[in-house]
Amino acid sequence: MIPAASFLAAIGQLGDRRFQAVLAKGLGITVAIFVAFYVVFVQVVGWFLGDSVSLPWIGTVTWVDDAISWGAIPLMLLLSVFLMVPVASAITGIFLDDVAQAVEDRHYPALGPANELSLMDNIRDSLAFLGVLIGANIIALVLYIFLAPLAPFIFWGLNGFLLGREYFTLAAIRRVGRDGAAQLRKRYFVTIWIAGVLMVVPLTIPLVNLLVPILGAATFTHLFHRLEAKRLRA
Image (cartoon, rainbow, N blue to C red):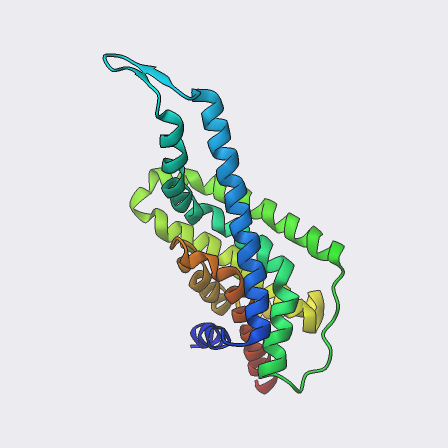
């Protein structure tokens, strides 16, 4: 199965020094985002509650600030299940070119130079997709409420479709341009969706999800080249 083989090929390159350098930068930015979110969360909650709070029949509780600080850690791990989807999109947009080049140099050395995308184009595309991603998930909250037992599958299916589309477009556009990427996306719609779900599922596992943005960029680079080779053989 092409998506699984692409994912395993990405994992197999974790020992590559260039790959590790990009992975370290991606991890650093991802952790920094969550630390910043944690600090803001603790400050906002602390501002509303103060250092102490009076409770009926108990009196004044003075350890609220410490409880908030420590309690926010597991809360952040839980929220990372949802926050990592937009974070993964942003990180992939930033580092995909570096990851794709490392993958291509090792696995597809006969290729010529890739098309260069401007930083502004990358930023514009990433922001546009981020808006779609957030908007779609806000709308999906209604389904999560009314179809609670199916919520994980709705989450995986929706975000797998969206991330798969974005990851594949970013990987393909370097080699075949926007029109070529759109044609391949249409032709291999189901395969790309499956690969997207394969990325989203580990995104819902705290700590493991920190590795997914870079592995996702590598996976979809492999996926593009394998689907393009399949198209050329057809």
